[in-house]
Amino acid sequence: MDQHQETRRGVPSFALAWLMGLGLAVLTVVFSRMEDIPIQDPDSLIPGYIRFPAIVLGAIAIDVVPRMFLAAGRPTGDWGRRLGRGFRTVMRERWQASHWRFALNGVMAWYLCYAAFRNVKSMAPFVHDKIYDAPLADVDRFLLAGHDPAAVLHAWFGTGLAAHFFSAVYIVWIALVPVSIAIALVWTRRTRAGEWYVTAVAIDWALGAVLYVLVPTVGPIYSDPSAFASLPETYVSRLQTSMWADRVAVLADPVGAGTLQTIAAFASLHVGIMVTICLIVELVRLNRWVRIGSWVFLGLTVLATVYLGWHFFVDVIAGAALGAFAVWLAGVATGNRVGWRLRLAADPVSGRAASASPGHPGALASHSGPLRDHRAAD
Image (cartoon, rainbow, N blue to C red; front, side):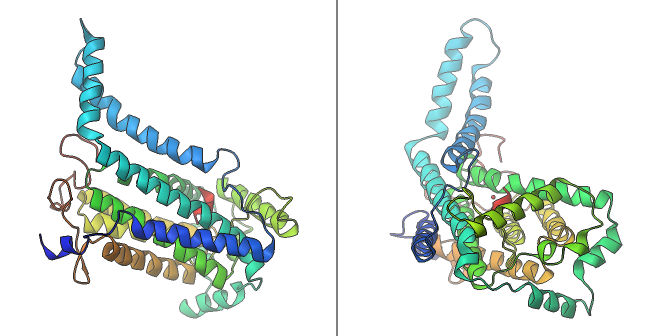
């Protein structure tokens, strides 16, 4: 057994992810008692404890059903029996008890962190009522030699089609986090890589929530709305209006509002989680085009968050630093290291390291098949 495998001995899977979630849960209870604010389910339309297991179960179905039909062959003769036999074979090969434990352990740790994160974020304005948008705007102008970052982007890209394009980028990001978690917990058979990623996202949320409390901000779209008045109506503009209405309702009556406020800008977890994704896909050596696509989407996310007014540029810098630190800390905690240098560890079942050559398409997926955060997640 090599050095980076030995560092893992005796440490439960997702230990740090659970610790992050429990720490946020304690903060949630403390803030709730301090400010007399109720703890709420973060998802009022479809509760998260239903939605996220449904995402995982849907990912399992996508993993199992195509393989089952492929094993059954053409629908002739005893096709029904062959279909049942194919189902049992796929479940036996891909969904052994160890992987069920891995997936369920990961999704429970992740959901605890998510639910507590949402509540801490909502309570942040009550715990620390000062707003730091003005000094952050000054830092932005200092970094850009007196220019406002959003105004620069509006001048470069215009305020027409670009607004709709960047709104679409934001929408894609909303779906990206739950989908990426499903991939890490369900489709991969490289459990050390999956655990690394899920733990890193948990750290992103935990540290992000702490920063929301320590440095409360609302973001340029709310602190200087006139700077974005020329942008057309988009999905994002309607979402921004809805989120501000929620914030006003919660600040006026946190008990009667029946919702959570979801506005906090420093640091940008949109950027932080994208940096986490980019670094993880590099470190586990996923397909070259996956890595290139991740970095491109990170760049688009940076532009979108500043262009649309969600974040100051300094929020982007802080988010990038947070995302990189989360990858390092999660790598150390999950044993994916040699000394203090990150390195994907050998899978405990196969004994093979999950890294692959730069062009290998299945670094996170099993060799047996082709398979390879919502507005308030930031």
